[in-house]
Image (cartoon, rainbow, N blue to C red; front, top):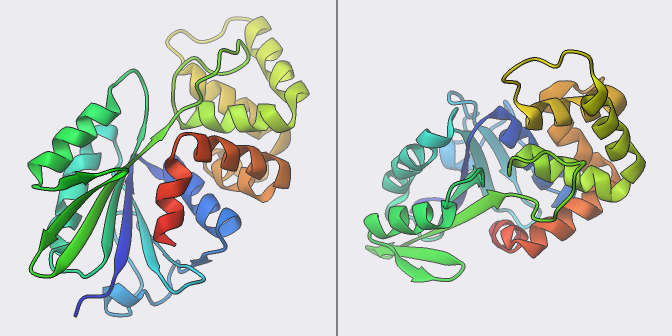
Length: 240
């Protein structure tokens, strides 16, 4: 009998850090980095930058960074194949919204796997097994001139910091706007998030910023409100 397990496939290491912060600080899961992970023959997870977790209720979860948005569905396909016959499994795709119709991409991918839509999931059943497929999209929908324009994880993180500390957000916006000779072709959403990191989380570094914001109770409350509003919280909470 296979061990029930949930997999979240995300774009990269910054998303992995954000999801780790959510699971550990928001949902009280135990991080199992370099520790035995039950569904992996009780061996530590290695390769692909995977992180393993155990929830308070005893559920196993892992985060797998795909190292690029175009690879998320391909890597998710690999795990769907590995989990066939599992009595209770989840495979979740986590994407930046960007300017793409992620919902349409997800629906097309899930249907191609033979899954049946049961909102907010798709379900894939075979030989007594059940795999639920779901989508997380990182975005922040309001109009605000002091947030990154791009609909990405960085925008979501900066929006939550703005909810908790509006004066920080305005200071970052003013500094970015008045910089002498900003670089051509910069990724503004990364400059914006990196400025918050440099101003208030410099000891964590850029990747660590996305984990560290979950330790701040005010920012965490803002993140939870936003993730609940988009339906993301319902999906992740169901797995833990």
